[in-house]
Amino acid sequence: MQFDTALNAVLLLSYVALKYEDSVAVGTFGNDERWLRPRKGISSLTGLMNSLYDLHSAPVPSSPFSALENALARLNRRTFIIIISNFREEDGESLSWILPRIKKHHLLLTVSLREQEAESLSVRLPANIEEAMESAAAFSYLYSRQQLYKKWEHSGLLTLEASIKDLSPALINSYLSIKKSGLL
Image (cartoon, rainbow, N blue to C red; front, side, top):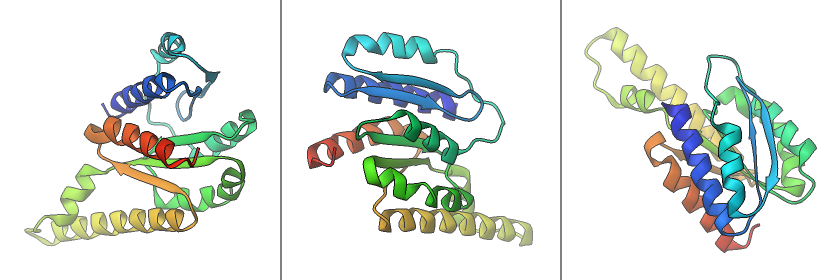
């Protein structure tokens, strides 16, 4: 469900960007690594959808670092890169190595999907010691993620955290806001 909703959000954002006459490239990582070269014009949306229709998620490790390395190797012009994942504290260390290279030539937005279950656990009133431990672990996990995002923002990186149901409008609003700001 999360994967399909995220894929639909990417396609909707692609539609909006193509309507604004921007080029759109798509790279996937994890279970199925693909690279769709930059395309321009609303007519290229069909080709984009045809290239992504059979994607599916699988419980395999993925590396946002490798995905960004791949993008850097393929992108020659200044590009607004959006990477969507469930970023965790361990991603912060690996991405810290590549962020200076990205910032030198590109604009990066990291989009992390909100962890609804962890949020619910972190604020519940525990009935016993096991629930208290679960709540404390969830709170600690969410706190670590927030610290990671603050660190990235402090280094000049753009971050967005959105629930899966709000992902499409959040992505489009971020894109339009950045486009309006002149950062691109």
